[in-house]
Amino acid sequence: MAKSKQPKVNKGKRGNKVVKDGNLTWRDIEVGAIVTEPGSASYYQTGDWRSQRPVFDKNKCVKCGLCYIFCPEGCIVQEDDGYFTANLFYCKGCGICARECRPEAITMELEE
Amino acid sequence: MMAKIEGIEVSIAVANAVKLANVDVVSAYPITPQTHIVEHLAHLVADDELDAAYIPVESEHSALSACMGASAVGARSFTATAGQGLELMHEVLFATASMRLPIVMALVNRALSAPISIWGDHSDVMAARDTGWIQIFVENGQEAVDNILCAFRIAEDRRVLIPVMINLDGFHLSHVVEPIYMPEPDKLDGFIPPYKYPFPLDPDKPVTMGGLALPALYAETKKAQDVVLRESKKVIMECWEEFERRFNRRYSPVERYQSEGAKYLLLTMGSYSETAELAVDKMRKEGKNVGLLKLRLWRPFPFEEMRQAVKDAEAVIVLDRALSFGGPGGPVCSELKSAFYNMNKKIKVVGFVGGLGGRDITVEGFEDIINKGIEVSQKGSEQEFEMFGVRE
Image (cartoon, rainbow over all chains, first blue to last red; front, side, top):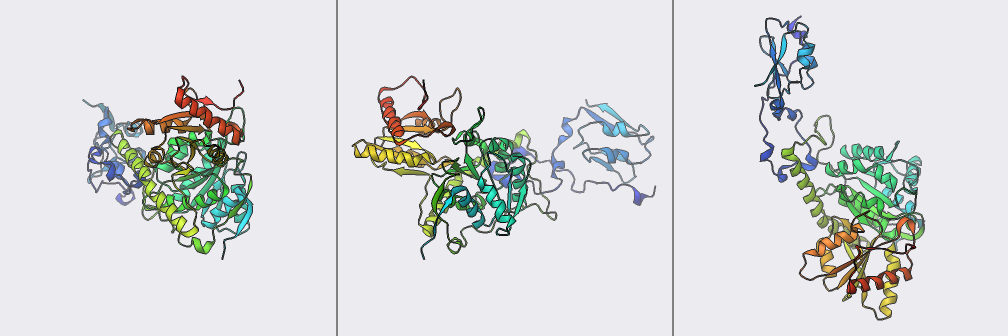
């Protein structure tokens, strides 16, 4: 598959900034608690909800991108070498990527 | 030129006031307990007399939801409902208020099932008391028209952005013909500035409305909402002052009638206040030291004005037109008790619940309520409240 035809992958250009809700006062809340920045949900560190993490085996991965397509939270990212990995800051560990991965390159491992 | 006075059904007059406010979207569910308000608006839109979108929907839940969407894109939105219809909107009432969408609603107050009653009382609005809406009561058709116009200005004020409910009594107001001055459009000019929502839905500037708040943030959003609702009282009063300048009719949060120096004050809401006035007139003539308070602004509750209004009184006798089953009686009575509890001067509050399901209270009935109330305030009572006029 030519690289140009591969799914466009969010590389997370903004990076992850941790929004500490504990720092916001009621005066900081926008009218109607409206969120004015699209995609800002990714600032929530939901990764610490996780009990299992996806681990990617590059020896089995065929770079098909199914994990990227099926991830309901859009937290699979493609590295420069074409392999995929999960943004563990946001990944809640649902395991859908591991279930959908055809060559079984993703395994869910218990968090310590 | 004198303003034109016309004899008109109050529901139709309310619809005409909504037209005067130049509304963009009306959404409603057209079945009992709905009134002529939305029926007449449908006529006005169909006849090209009002340039607005009229969205007929499948339920009141959807009617208010459609208004939410319209308001969120920056359209001036109106709906009307009554009784059961309001209860079906219940979930959406909270969302509209907390998302700060300034919808205006005419609520025709009616009793709730079961048994079925399409007649008036305040059970519907009292069940929606804590939804975060601004809630205003009117006592006649003129007040309904005037306050519908004020409601748009108040709701859409940048300092407020809170939906407003105008409460008018079912049948006693909604279905009667009254003499009403329709405000002249030229005098109204600029009274309701164009509606500008700060973050309207716009594909070029996406926003998230009604998103998720985790436990670390939810309470802050609620505090912000409560503060704005409390502070809206200032804008509401500003609006009423401006209305008085233009139309010479005065509105205030707690209205006083013959209350100067009165030892015993009756407190009512809505259309029954006019009958209560006659009772107070009669008793005053007989030398009784009684007066009347009419609570117009129910949310935000006007604590300051209420304490000021009762400061020289010994007791306040409250007529509630809703019942808190198994609780302290009527919601207005409870509210007054809490408002007065920490005052240095002890003011007794005596509660009556009456006028349920459209039952009339006559002038003699109000005299009876006041006399009984005075007696209870002097002798005390083991009961939380009394249901007035119920056959034993």
